Length: 493
Image 1 (cartoon, rainbow, N blue to C red):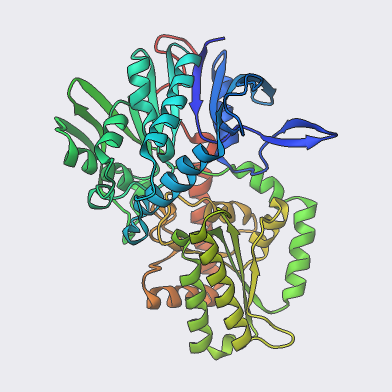
Image 2 (image 1 turned 60 degrees about the vertical axis):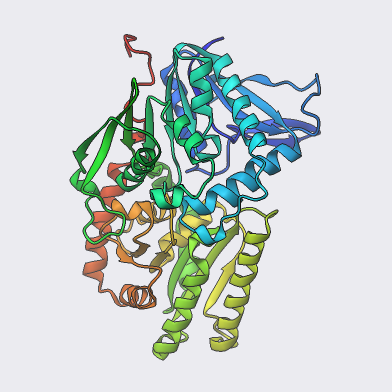
């Protein structure tokens, strides 16, 4: 059945779990992941489709069922699983996306390496996604493509199906032109994105960077700009912009540029935070801590997340403030992101070595300054730590948005707690009432965490009230595909 909405995303919209010797489809375990949010849009159309890849030892196997119908809480929709070989997945995702694109997107040019990239493979995989979307889409349908590893899909899709409305959302930062243009395929990528009807970003800075890169490579005839809304004017923040592009013209095409920062499922988080299980776990954590203050840091094991820099800051704080020894603990949750890549394994090893050195240097029989957790924590347990923590310390070196800080704020139904947030996280543009810090500055990092620990209750609650107002005002349910309607033009809701 042709679909009025086709979502193109590299991940499947469910988890495959083996039960009693057969594979069953389960909802994704992450409550604030992008997958359930995207599936919720299927409720606005008669039929939807999802395009993803699936690992296949033999992609040519005639028994492979590529298109299946799924029925769940979000409705009935088609899922096209594109069979990719282990080699294709490695080259497309681990090498091209993670070794070449990822460091450039986050402006880490020194970590960039394009020598091993198999660009024909990347083109082939993107073409496969585009073909599948073209086959599923009804006349005039909306195809919503997600993230940088599918950069070439819009251009291919426009050639295959010029009747379609194409939207693209960029979940990572988009770097300045001088960083982006390090990529030798820059012109091919931007040309593909300019085939969209709408291109979306988390914050105005990333939209501005995209337009700057486009103007460096193509004759952009006009750029329409608007003042940035006051809710995104966080004075003194590194990523703040005062105007933002909303439309550009290239040749005979007009492309809208949208800013739609993603939020979290506030109602779900608050329900968990108010649950009996969370109340019990929170009380147990606080009882175990006693008078010790808890700093909580949660992130993936990735050089962009600043975990090593954060641990170094904590070590300096203990050196310079010996009165804190025995009176503060850091719970550092660092979950490995890509276990098969040496760069992430090296970072994990360095985090473990640094934490071990700090514990050996300052710890005692009955007190260890750092509890290092290298596994995913069940959500109710994580929410309990959010509630129990005195400070959430979220200091990435670069981040498209960062939902952990928003989860922390949503979980603080008690109205207390302090958020220390990197000004290089996209969320800092919205969360100006956090204690903002520069993770590239030792002085800024150290003073921010000390001031958070010493902050009086009135100031804590005043800041948290402001943060909660922002998080409540932009939940994941407010997110949308830019300026394009899910429904076809002329079709009533």
